[in-house]
Amino acid sequence: MFSGSIPALVTPFRDGTFDEAAFRRLIDWQIEQGSSALVACGTTGEASTISNAEHHRVIEVCIDQAGGRVPVIAGCGSNDTNNALLHMRFSGKAGAAAALCVAPYYNRPGQAGLIAHFSHLAENSDLPIVLYNVPGRTVTDIEPETVCALARKFPERIRGIKDASGDLSRVVDHRMGISKDFCQLSGEDELALMANAAGATGCVSVTANVAPKLCAEFQAACGADDLTLARELNDRLYPLHRAMFGDASPAPVKYALSRVHEWITPEVRLPLVECSERAKKAVDEALAHAGLV
Image (cartoon, rainbow, N blue to C red; front, side, top):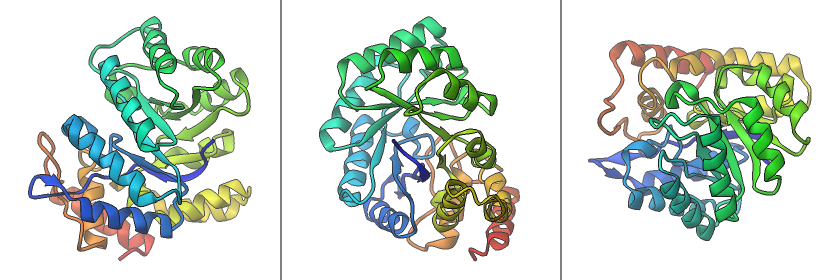
């Protein structure tokens, strides 16, 4: 369903508000540089600190600016099932290709609760769902048996997963337990090479915000089974992957973008703050290593 380099786009801010003009420029640049799809309002898009009205406007702008050139995956997750469904219904009407739905955070539902949550979304919206498993943030793990059960129950609705569990064996678990049409995307840039080797088809990437061409070339090399080139590109990108999490994300990637483009500020929303001098130094060094500055 999806493959290649898929940036989890930042949401640019300027003086406390959504910078729509910068976001539109970012989208155009991403598409020109080879990104195969776009994610709006994911973790990197600071979905947790924007209002529902802002959330919907960011998705709307992303779909409008993409203009059908690449598909848009709308971040629709919430710890509130009804609010997640609200996002999905809006995104479907706006023209999103799929909804990225994170495991409900804070509530800590068990596996039965996760099945009930995602079943409710699948039964009440026509929008395809990409599950998003990131237990380091949600404190809730969508276990492989649950992923397989959901995908088998709703094969036309639950179409893939962005997995940021850090457990590479899950790529094989999912591949063995679900049809080959189930789309597996790495949720961690550092592990994308290994995930692709195990059967994933791409990465929902933080690094691609600032290095879209290199990330697209890396994914193309993986898709062509050119391991030598994929390793070379991964080595070039690896310090940047690490630097993106040298402080609370997305502060480092917003700083990196401000170094590459003067029209994007490093501004984040509270409770996040701009990254530390130590993190900035790591980003600067990584940008130089990748040949981006």
